[in-house]
Amino acid sequence: MKLQYSFKTALAGLNTNKRRSMLTILGIVIGITSIILVMSLGRGAQELIVGQIKSMGAKTILIIPGRQPKGPTDFVGSLSDTLKQREYDALSRKVNAPHIIKIMPIVFGSEALAYGNETYRATVFGATYTFGSMHNVFPSEGRVFTEEEIRTFAPVAVIGSKVKSQLFGENDPIGQNIRIKGNNVRVIGVFGGKGQVSFLNFDEAAMIPYTTAQRTIFAIKYFNRLMVETDREENIPSTVQDITTTLRNLHNITDPSKDDFFLQTQAQAMATVGAITGALTAFLAAIAAISLIVGGIGIMNIMLVSVTERTREIGLRKAIGATEKDILTQFLLEAITLTGVGGLIGILLGASLSFVASLILTRALGQAWLFSLPISSILLGIGVSAGVGLLFGIYPARQASLKSPMEALRYE
Image (cartoon, rainbow, N blue to C red; front, side, top):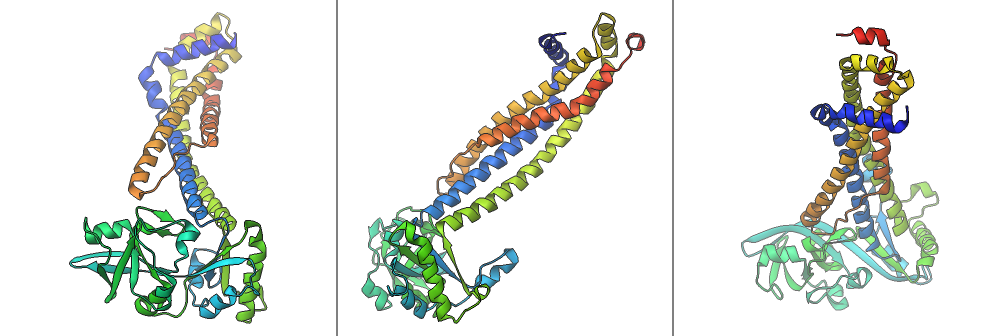
């Protein structure tokens, strides 16, 4: 029997019980939808995080105090006070790092901001006036603080748009004093809906001079980060080596395994993010694939029931000349058609839900969550659905093909 006739016969068999066929493929639909949704959201999350890393600038290097974490349990090791004024001064000298054109100390922490009867917990971020030029972030109202205000520990701040709306509503905050840990800080500027840039959400932050943050707000003498910018992107590797050598000399470190700091470039950060999000997406997709196994078992059971119900049909077809191969092909095509249709429905449903989820996440997070549908997820959905149909359809199809025509015709 030609394949096209086997296929027509398979469709006719499925069409005789449409409701059962639809319920049979439900497990496949759920499984493929879950895989598409997980892979799409995983890719969207990866692109969002990588975009934030790129916003740091291709020529920036982040210096982080403490040893480099090797895993979640080692995170505490990165909390250290090894970056201080002397490290800042040493790296500012051209003789130590000739390709550094900007260096910025960073101090940050979460604090309650108050104005009148209103309070709002935000990230208090101490930096220099060069932060805007390094990340292309500038106030939409007012101005940023000056070098003189940094040098004199001036209590001034540039606040985010959400901080403004929470504390001042529709009122003009420029020139008004807010209180941070009992200190009056004058608002001199407002960031206009910048969202997440690098590791900071500017809408929910108040940026002040790092000297003020150290002395007045946090009462510390060290930096949480040092960020440097090189003159050219190709000089990043040599600058990394210069920074490493300078800090090791300052800290009297001869064994690299004893480093009390670590550096992070854009390429390293993106590689790390890619590895983490990729592994997490694969793990979640594997969990979602369990439903495909359940769906496959359901298809096998339904096909066995179908074989039993259609025993007389099998006997009649064999009596008029159908071979074991014809019967095997027919029932195998029925199983593959069921899973194939389920796979296509799952792909369309998964893509639709992913698109809706990207819109919801964009609104919820206040930043663009790009809709991404990897081709690999579509190919995986098609391949897995066809594979499940083939794998779980072979046994019922084989059982049908081995039935004796005489016994099948006598079956009641």
